[in-house]
Figure: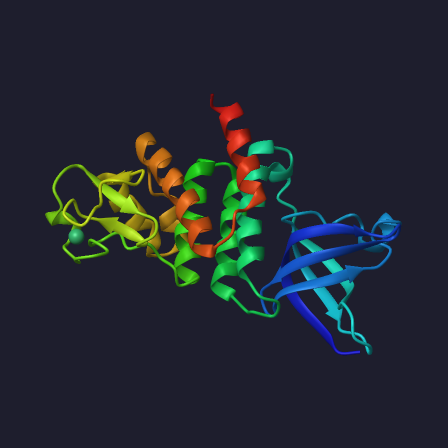
Length: 258
Ligand SMILES: [Zn+2]
């Protein structure tokens, strides 16, 4: 039986019969895979109860002789990220990120950069040094860039005039056009979304540089709210999905900060 050994993060898990679990893993070396963990439900001895959502593991799995799901053979817990699971708000953010990844990735699509990003934001979410909202902005900006769908935040998406030359402190954003839009190119009828120029700058800073530095970008509170609103509309729109976990996240967030 050919075996694979790789770091992995648990994206999803579902019961399969009385004994087994089906788990979707984002692996570093083999991309996204869905595997069966036999007896994981029935006996905690089998995997020691470590197959929890968002846990970082080292796994070994085999593809078996016949067709069907790969079979998880071994799992070692590397980072359990316990404070994520003990907080509703943190769980809601992590669930949203995991759903975006799961929706976008095809089985076997290897995405090492996205893996590092996901691992990094989970680690910071667990550590609690950075506001959850800032981590979510960082994750979504970099995720959508890796997916090749980055928003155009530097020039009008229609006539290409630079953002500095667009009048006013706030710039209109057009979801359909995939970026900002100047006053001359904007049409008057649709519901409008605006981003302040300060928020635009902060979003652009987050796109580049190493993750450790990016995590330290300090947001003014208005920029956090604007950035979140914008990305939570932009990312699902351009992926063509409406993540169920986003509804849950918004509900929890409203309850936490009424
Ligand atoms: Zn224009």
